[in-house]
Image (cartoon, rainbow over all chains, first blue to last red; front, side, top):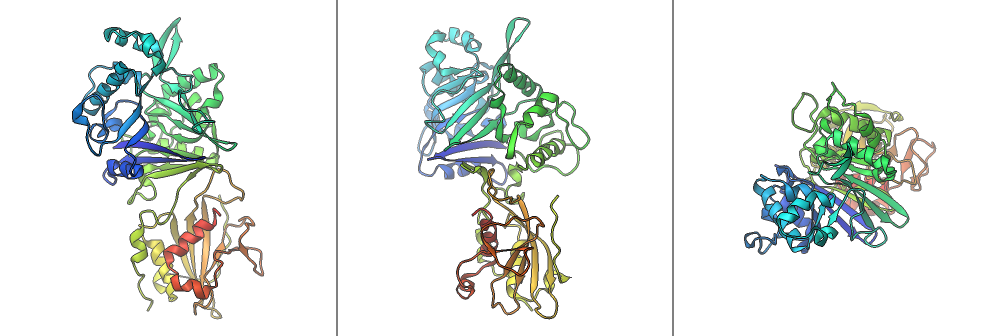
Length: 349
Length: 143
């Protein structure tokens, strides 16, 4: 299972497409289809290095660091976004190792990359590479800052970084969640703003700390949302350490976070269909889904599961448009039903 | 929880439907390949008309900021004329369904009757399909 989210900007209208590659969907083909003739992405972000978030990347993308990952049909990456862990972590395997090699190559060369962490987190790596940190500092974005190159007045969207972040414990800065990239995107369409939170695979403990740090800096508005891409495929661990019998009750700061949803907001679970019973170890967890349904009901919004959309038997990319009407999930009957129009109904009598 | 207006007539199974267009719509509603619609029930109106009624739910493509109070799920009733001389009438069954711009005039205010097409039915029926009919209903909520 590999998740891909693509964002397109057409004048003042934005389109988000959530793809979940699995048995029913050829992810590479679906993303390629969305690209059309274009052979590059402006930005590709790997939120973290877990296999379900990087699997297949080395076969799909044109990677600058080795000729074997180049050639016709591969999709180029103008700017690669990674959390610091992808640079410094040891022992990565398979596609995660290849993406790490690409990220390190770009960081050494000083172009086509943005790394997320406090710059000091990368000091040792730069020392080993004999590169002065000051020469690459402009490619590193810390939590609490906007990502350079995107503005609401220019591209119509800005990105505020929440994680990786550092906390001060006993007078020392301690890096938290340096494995995972969490951002809030704010889209501007005329005078209307629509906010999206992308939360990677973040646990409740980290989300709680993230909320506390954000409140401390009086940046509460940066946790408001109209669309929330749920953390960790609807795992209860992102809400609480207690799963609950039928519903997961979130810990206080996480509860606060989910109360920041605007009316009509959309909660997206990038996951398999929600099981109706049982207690699976792996997400999605029905107890967590029940909490998210409750949140959606409260804000008169929608809770959508990618592999249930539009139906569990015929899932297709979940497409959300953003314009003056806010966020709208595209729901066309013609999608995936071409054959229907050519089938005649049985005759009466 | 939404409250729905009741539909008159005798409840029948989908196999008991006799009006071709009603059968086509039920067939389309029961196809797993068509998302965002769900069959609720079928009914036949009394002796005088023999019209048949298909009750179904639609999932609306709903923007976050709305002008009218349209819900994500709306329950509708489509009434099919036995002789196919008039366009199937589509009624919104939610008791507090709002007064939207495109409504047909009726003797009773509720249920509200959705105005779906501008063309005369004599022209429309030449290219009428159940799938297009269902999609037209869903699209009218976002116009």
